[in-house]
Length: 293
Picture 1 (cartoon, rainbow, N blue to C red):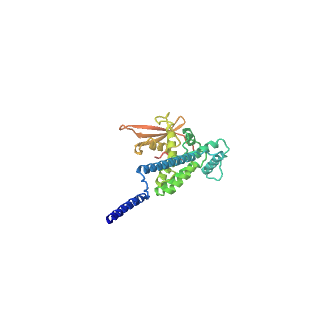
Picture 2 (picture 1 turned 135 degrees about the horizontal axis):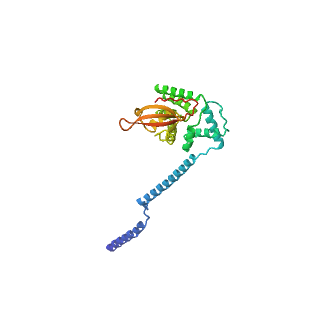
Picture 3 (picture 1 turned 60 degrees about the horizontal axis):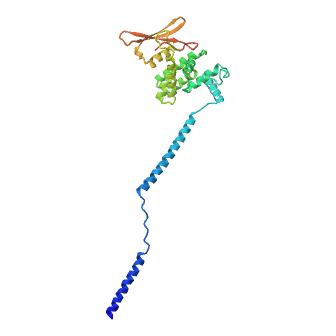
């Protein structure tokens, strides 16, 4: 009987092991987290980038629209009136304008002066012409401008460029279209890195361009109209780009009631020369310029 008991015992043990195994196998194993694929990450990152890009585009468009809206400036009638009064007061150097702003002959010219001083690019060539050849009947303008030029040149020779620019600006408040002073202001503001350089350069180019459309200087009939002999020389050197050493002589002559300034330059062919004619139209009571080069 012992062998049978031992066999039964072994069977029971085997059955017990077999019965216990399914319970252990049925136990819940810890669930593993699903792995996120690279494709999903790249899609999410690309969508985020697109969202940021679209938002940045919207921001840039909004900022550009705001900048455009800032550029549009239309002064009111009261502001234009104040601009005219300030322009007259600053030009005359007094606390009150010597001309009544309500005067219809004074209003357009003073408004042109203010626009020119502010480098208004909407000024037409005819408006610049009107402003340049406007008659100044004040008897002290000519000696005042001559004194300003002398003081400015003396300060430049002493290398006092900031002081020289201030003196030049005083002269430009009196006569804003004085080409000689504008040229000095360009050079000084460029040297001092002033933010007014572009305005002065605009004024100089507009004035010289306007003069170039008055003639071609080939004859008396086609003479270029200028306000002074110094303006004629500045035009010859800086617009025609004639070297100063190529200017052999200058002279003034009167013909049929008109005054001409003739600049003789060395011709391209050896031994030949050519004359450039300028018609003088002084707008001052006394011409403050001379024929010195």
